[in-house]
Length: 109
Image (cartoon, rainbow, N blue to C red; front, side):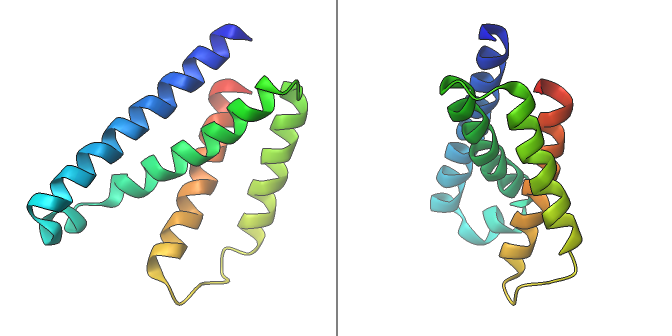
């Protein structure tokens, strides 16, 4: 379990560093930074999803239960994928969270 938590922590820290870099780029040239912000959505999703996994595992939720929760999340979100928000950013984030949850199941659970 410790190895998995270490790898999860590394993913969270890597995503946070990328978000910090994006924040600095926004201060220098906001239009340019946002024009190339695709990976920023994925990094924000990684921080959220991996933090949820970390919290669950640190609070004695079994890997199987965590995995099932994310499978349920992916299924629920995928079934409503055509329900679009008027916010393009919300739609992108939804897709990124599905992708990261899938990534997490494959890598860690």
